[in-house]
Length: 461
Image (cartoon, rainbow, N blue to C red):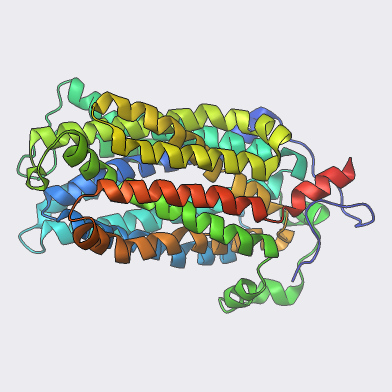
């Protein structure tokens, strides 16, 4: 296996990777705008689509659990093979191009699941589409993390992941706001024969076009280093490692760097909280803030509450887009771990504050804190992690790192609905409060992570 670190230390015999311009970094990450556009539509609307197909609120986590299960399987496999791929399209590009095609198809089919309800219940078709959609999102998303680490030197990685997070935020803002925008411009919010309102259906159609269009921009306007040039910057991978099958994933998992293991706890707390927020916020706001009954899931009032939540999600993504550009400066003063801890604490307080809201407009202010946390979650763990991974293993370890994103979502999916029904007496607002406390736990745990890349940069100075 490769042992040469990607920092190109003195005496390694490697050529330092060239610095890239902001324009180059922008195009390299632009596809993530499309990925997050699709994620925003899924996160903000999948629960209400499934509710309109007949799902009960306590069932929602079980439908959502399929998505992280797919991610747990798909991302390490994609990472493993993208480390070993090179063709005319590139190394990472073939995978996120394939993911874009599949994701766009799933975005079109999900809101039309009722079309085949005479054969299979729409709820189960919808749940299957959520599964396929998330698997496809993972195929498209995983290589982007490795691409940034492939192409950027240590000193530019914080900026690289920050620009990537900025583009994620832009895509998510537009995706989150789109259903409400369409509703305000004449598209019906009544659930017709399809069970899904027109403003939601057409938002998903637009999302499919944006998804594949953004990916194509990265494919056509960014470069990857061909194998010979890549070896000059990263070192050679031995022949045995190149030919290793999928069984190598388990060996790599057992040898994961210390930093990755420590970040695993941070990710568990963070993504358990995020999963609760995505699954339960619509119903929490509808019942706790608007005073609706859980039985109102097909009503216009419930759709209005859903639009409020979707717009609020747009707010946290807008905050994240702007804040991401500030993270390199904040990390310079607080350190990478300090910047992440500060951001996670803000997110935890933002989630807890939802319990105290009586005016739906105030949800926007709660989402400001969530936006700080979201920007940091999408960038700082990868910045910290990338400095501890051997170059030839960037794809597989970025994929394995996804375990620490999917596992907490699976745990939440198994237990979350039962907890809401039996411990919270059917009141999902308490799941949001628990999510806030978990985010605070993540803020504390990140302070104990070993950041090898930061230490190496300081030593170079």
